[in-house]
Length: 178
Image (cartoon, rainbow, N blue to C red; front, side, top):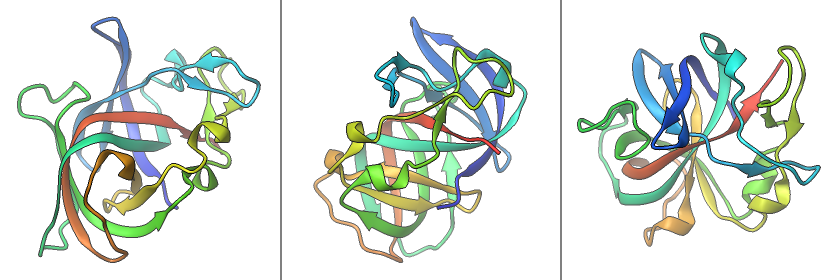
């Protein structure tokens, strides 16, 4: 899976929660960086302050999808929320389903959480058990791919289908560091 190539514009907070503002394919939008469990059992956010103003490969997951529909157009896009483009809610994504998996953990090898580590450190790998048996779809957006949490929607998707979805929250799962 090709992750999204993005630039981290800002690492900060919103309403006491960690918010990251990224630019991908010329589009600037906010994402949520909540606590995730590492393989060592620690809880940490993914994004270190030193990643600000860096180009990264980031894995995003759309959670709590509020609207998922097939579309005729094969256009791929990210449209930030008109109410709060730098928030993590209500962004619109359109892309093509690359794959549907029953175990999201299989997609998370080498995904790192780097908060609390020095620049250049590899960080910690995300705990795969947290995502075992969780269904998701890999959605190609043109600038890379993201995950769509299928437990949050009643609609099935199929490989090569073009879809559009609005998500209540867009999460950073972690980074692939070279």
